[in-house]
Length: 358
Ligand code: G3I
Image 1: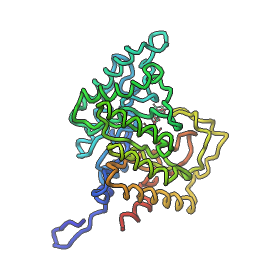
Image 2: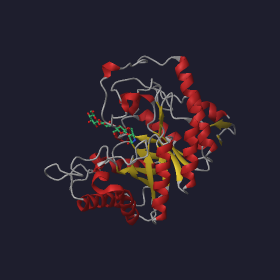
Image 3: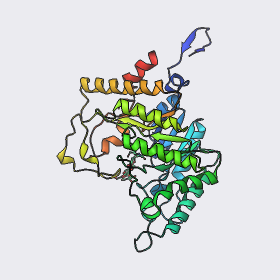
Image 4: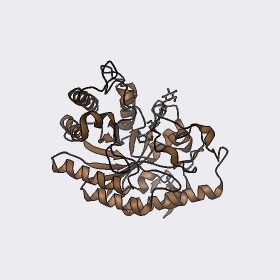
């Protein structure tokens, strides 16, 4: 795109991701509170220039926004929503019902025992209603339920499932829809290319819709590595999810460039492994052949997403540049990873530069 300048010459404007993807899908990033607070101006320039959608990395999660039963902490979420509004972005809420980063009080009584089902139902309803009401009309859609299904297709044994059984999911969607019949409602998870997990989500969403619940989208988080996910299986999941009638979104895209650690099956987000057992192979810079392979792989997934642009509504990166990615600290704290589309010098990486030239 070009704009006129005073001399009558044409000055070219820096190409942006949101222009490049305008006929495909929304393009966005997760942003942390310090960014909204103005403490990362270079990342801010990236987000404002390139993205048309934002999601909060942490500040709307239960332990942050609802730390005690009668205490809500709004400051950070309010600032985040204002940031999205000021920049005319589609704002996504993340996330209402999730086992991880759940406030410690949420599912237990004063003795630390599981609460009765009706108590948890009421707490879920209050939580969803209070938060969604505050941002009604400002947020495009909410991750209502996050990470409910294991990779083998069984329900995750979260406090919600343990106390309420499968019913907690339709209840969450029902409560959310009651607050705002116009807002989009999503279900979101990682490892969505696993066949059993795919089938479980297709069944779950079909069942929800058949029982009259509004479900607008299925989020494929898209946390990737140098040897996963399988491209063919991922495409099958995009197609199968679209087959439910829901929109598909890639909600948390990043790719670790470090060797995949398989021993993470029982490491929840927020927990870490003992650093000494594993390598931090590229603390001072990533070898050329590794970053070339990383870009090649990201380019292939991007081509897949573009191929399915009719089914994919939004692609959101889980962060802006390598230095701020959660992947530097999980499953081992203090590693140097290279997971995001902008590098530590805030430079756009080749897979996107090349795509934008075509
Ligand atoms: O804010 C505290 C800080 O005060 C404290 O000094 C520091 C010490 O550990 O912790 C800080 O909190 C950390 C928080 O991120 C903010 O940086 C938590 O320990 C850390 O556990 C938390 O990690 C977040 C993780 O979710 C927790 O589950 C990541 O930033 C966030 O990127 C990640 O995002 C999740 C999505 O919500 C759902 N899908 C998976 C994705 C990656 O785990």
